[in-house]
Amino acid sequence: MILAGREISRLVAIFVTVFLIQIAVIPHFRLGGYIVDLPVILVVLVALHLDAPNAALAGFLSGLFVDLVLHTPFGMTALTFSLAGYGTSSVASQITERNIFVRSFTVALLAATATSLFAGIGALIGLEYVTRRELGAIALVTAVAALPITLVLAPLVRWAFPLETVQINE
Image 1: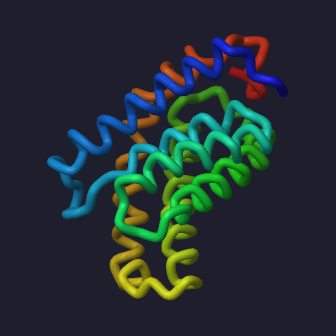
Image 2: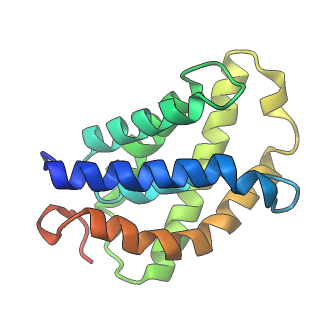
C-alpha cells in the first residue's frame, strides 16, 4: 500500500498533536500514579489500518519523537513502537469486528502488550528500573486508559484514511 500525501499529512498532524498533548498535558494527570502513554495507543490504532511495513515505519517515526523526551536509551521507544506497529498490523486482518467497543478492547490489549515489550527490551539491555514489579500495574493502566482514548482517537484515525485505503471492514 502506498500512502498518498493527504494521508501522510493527516497522520503527521495527528501524531504531532498527540505528542504535544503527551508532553504538555498528560504528565499532570496520572492514573493509579502512572502516566498514560498516548503515543503507543495511537500507534496501535493506526497500525490497524496500515499494512505491516507502513505500520512499522509509522511506529518507528513516532517512537523517535518520543525518544527525544524520554530518559531511556535513544531508539528504545522507536524499536518498541515499530515492533508494536508491525505486530498489530499483522493481526489486523483477523479483527473483522465493526463494533468500536471490541476494537477498543483489542487496542487496550495490544497497547498493554507493547508496554510489556518496552520493559522486556529494557531488561535485555540491562535497564533495571524497567523490570520492576510494577510492570503489571503499568500495563493495566495503559489498557484501562486505552479504552476511552480509543473511542476519542478512532474517528481521527478514520479521518486520516479515505475508505479506499482502509484495510479493515469499517
